[in-house]
Length: 179
Length: 179
DNA sequence: AGGGACATGTAATTAGTTACATGATTGT
DNA sequence: ACAATCATGTAACTAATTACATGTCCCT
Image (cartoon, rainbow over all chains, first blue to last red; front, side):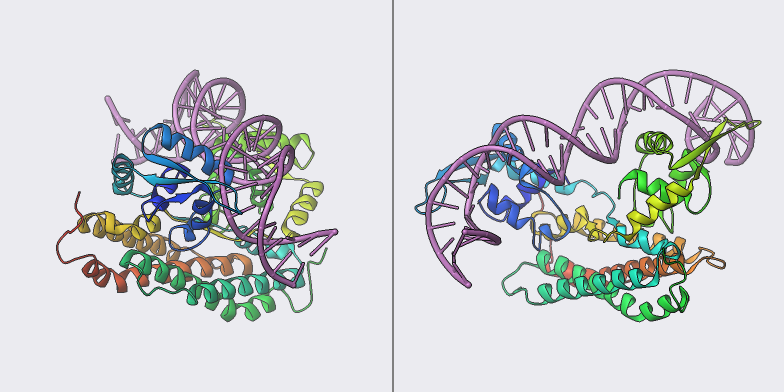
């Protein structure tokens, strides 16, 4: 999804500054499966304002830098709904980890084990953070997406845990392909 | 993962032309979780050849266009192993579908249902194709990655099937937010 | 004294996609 | 007759990341 639409999506949940949009795009529900950086958000907000899809209000803060708070206009909401109604592109699961594992015969066993263990820790941490989320008061869409994410990470984690030792054995009892 | 490394990865399983590399990057095991296009593969192969990481052999074919068959050199294999030993970046699951669902209160129920049903069909098809794969003779890495993919898609499918009707109900018995 | 959160923005770089250009053969 | 597969490559375009630039406040 392009950064402009992502900004509109965040703003549909309430007004926010560029900095706050970045934060929202780093955590559930909207940001769980999207990525962006400041370098794309600020220009996007400028373009959206020029198109009249958002309005900007300067907010002076004591003890903090001033901020520009953006809010969705009716036109902006219309554009967002338009985009949302288009058939979404297929999901893309990009994984360098799996590419490495698919070529694990080229690596030594210790390295492969390290990568799998690190991945297990990563999924555990992600699940823990998701489990700690307070969803009381969240709308149905938010809870649905949250549940989807948990189901995926749980499946990944269970697979890695269940298969790791057997897989490592198969690579050869000693580190056969050590460099 | 950058296209150059991806090309080296494919070539580690046997020599291939640019066209064949593209095909390999569209299907398991290596291509299951990666993407590329011709426009990035051909220049990448040119650069790899210039660096001495691959060698190229022209092959004349009757009834088919000539092709350039690339093969990994020792230096190329070394570079690949080097890259493979680096800690892989975290996996990225990018999903416009989930973004849309997280904002489903902005959409009408029929559209949301259509998106979910299409996604279910997509995962079913993917699983069917993976189930039809012949893995006899495949190495441990290939089987591991294949199993990982199946576990993920199965979890996604089960979640969507189990939650769909309840979710749709929650959005409101009639299409409340129809545009 | 150092790092992190807050806060905005630009510029340089990198990388990728899409479209164009060409053309035979095979299957429907 | 049309689409798909095989086959390579370039050019234009789009988009995003990274680094740079600046500065305060708060916590340890």
